Length: 169
Image 1 (tube, rainbow, N blue to C red):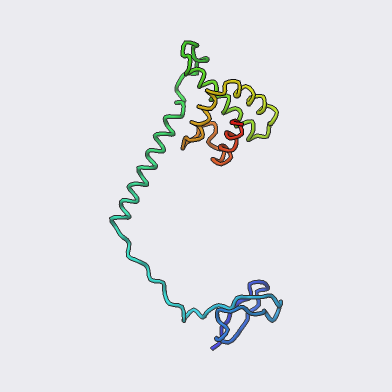
Image 2: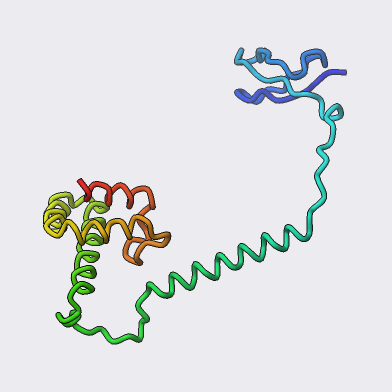
């Protein structure tokens, strides 16, 4: 009984003896190297393990919990659309105000880097490095956060970490 298959390069129907199954040969039309498949009737069907219903339910429950938690975290970071837009925070907030300003500078830096505005990003980097201690705390927190701030959500995680790493230099 012969094996029939189509050449993967030129598409010609090729026939060969069963003894060549599983080996490589040369197409008589295009002379390219081709794999000679094993006849389908000789293949043993793949036996699947039975589904563990308990483990599957637990996996689904854990996945739903993770999705719910991620949504809660995302909702905490977003500003509600009905919240009135007020001016800058009052100065008496001290350290919190400084951290928020530095986080804004870091966010702006990353966005400038991502959009290729390197000169503007370098100006922001100088301003950030002027507050090195606070900047290091903000950069560390942003590097460790699973969910980046909403403004940085579209930047791939590896790229974001690379930009933050550059700020530490």
